[in-house]
Amino acid sequence: MPSAVFILHLDDMQGFIVVKRYPTTFSLNEKILNLAYYNHIQGEKSDLKIHEIEGMRIATYGDATHPGWLVCMVLAEDEDYGPYTDEFAGMGHLMLELAVENPDLVDVRGILVNRSVIPTPTVEQKCASIFLTPSSVLLLERLRERGAERSAALAIWLREQIQAEDVDIIAAVRPLMESGVVHVEMVQRTAEVVFLLADVFAYRAPPVEAIKYAEEHMPDVAEEYHTLVKEFFSPDPPARGYNPTLPTEDPNAPIVEDCERMASLISKSLTYTVLQHLRKRPMTLEQVSEESALPKSVVRNALWALEAERVVSTIRDDVWVLITNPVIETFLPEYVLDIVKKRVAEKEIGAETARRYLELLVEKWSEPQ
Image (cartoon, rainbow, N blue to C red; front, side, top):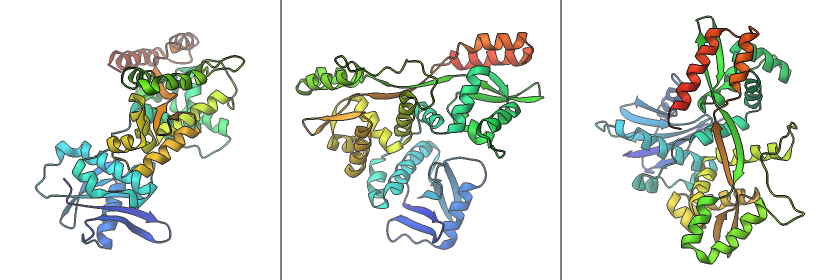
């Protein structure tokens, strides 16, 4: 386990700021800070990296969502860190999220002793980033119409859509690639093609697991819990319940806006951690804090954010329940088969591209999801 930890923030005006240091007697200098930061951002893209700096082995953790922030963990020279890389990444992720919220919230010793972590992002969280990147949403809509398209053609199309010359097609495609929604590769060594391998659907589901738990183990809250959920999904007439399957072409429609709000909640690691616990069962703030290893103030803020979006509510003032379960799912885009067949017949794409597309779809959806 790390013998020391320091957290850096690169400020535009003040340069490197050590916002947290454990133990407080751990000695640092400007050279160590510079080497740790710039070694991390150079070379192959990775959230967790291991470096040899000034006679120390240092694991650094940072991610693209918090530029300028870096968690540095000093390891023993003879330590075999290989089996613990996921754990280091999880602890680094937790410390980073807390530090960005407020450095005083980072209990380094407690995190190290309890080995508290934020797990690696789920597919659901990776998909959430699609809805938060407008150019990625546009590309997804285009690929729903085309199935597969050359990267160059997509770049031209996207440039026309947003009326800008400096379109970063790589940045637009990245959320789609990282979530497994698209695959990019060269076909016949002549053209780079983007293939749509999965489609994405974001919606609010009934909190089935949490309700079942309440019925079996918390009968004192189960009835009121049922009522809260029913009022949202199937209220008495003339009120209308939530229905995410209503067709809409309006980008400003309430359902579309709601997808973006749900994606925003899911993409925030601390809020998502709280959400994950409430998906299982109703809990008090103290229970969520204890089981998640998050400070009560962080849990409270996350609960308030979820409550503001009608995701959670309280029963008896102290029990928090999930009334709508934000879900982002991927599914096989069967509709692309007819699209590809038609485009091959009209000679818009070659037979080799179509064959490779079918291979990729089979490979992806024959694996356990």
